[in-house]
Image (cartoon, rainbow, N blue to C red; front, side):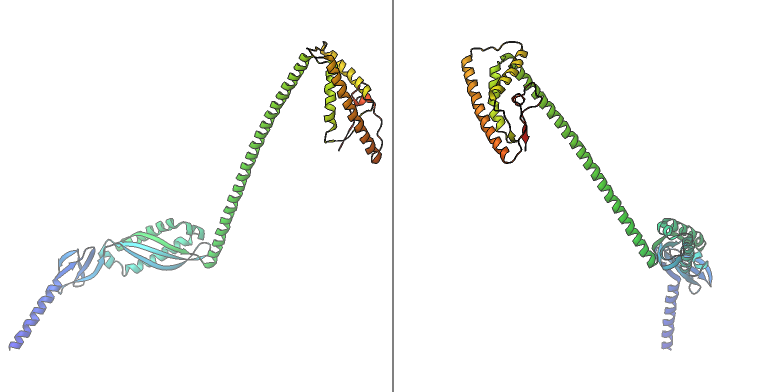
Length: 364
């Protein structure tokens, strides 16, 4: 009898524990539990401690109220230009009404996936490949609006839809890579040509400026040289007019210049007349005419005329000796290799008035 009472007591305690467990329900934060009483919706349990009628009330579903992320597998979609592309999508949603999410639709997550696929095919089917690759924001907005409108009656709010990847066929990818490579090469060629163009322009501008500067420097140099020569000529001319040289002095200066003329490296053959005395007389007459143009007689200024005449005579004799030596060498050279030249009058060699030429000089 005591054993039966003990067993009955244990059963009563267990029943009480089970009843207490079924009557108390603790719901965590961000979760809602839908409660049914005898198979009919009764109420929704909010987070915290809730009491139920044991063996009468039962929890139908436990709905997570947080925003959820679902990644759908790649879906083949045909574009308007008849290309099959594979598109991966990511969906962000949350349950706003657990009752409608429980009773309005069965497996709402699967329904959202199928709705996303069909909507995506409708949107991509109206676009070509290029627009589909460059219009992701437009596609995302369109998908979000369509899904939100449809899932609103299910108690679900679609917050965002993102296209994760759009993969065209391998042949199309290869063609796109070739096109991109050609476009980059074209841009590189254009940039290279622009660089060469700018370099050529800058080089031409630099050469132009350098030529202008060189020309300006040469012009300034020529102007300064001309001014210097003009000043030198003016100084010499004034000095000659102030000194008022005589015929003998001019003849003496000319005779001193004869050896320098004879020693010129650019002269191959220089023909002088042998009648130097008659040539000097012609020279004296010409210089006398020059002296007459001065307008006055030479002023000796303390010089000894006898000494000047003697010095001029000595210079004339030296010039005559040099001329005879050169004449002998010229005649010997002509006899060996050159034909005999035409005779030249003495007055022509010394610039006489009856001959319009100067001393014949044969250049190298």
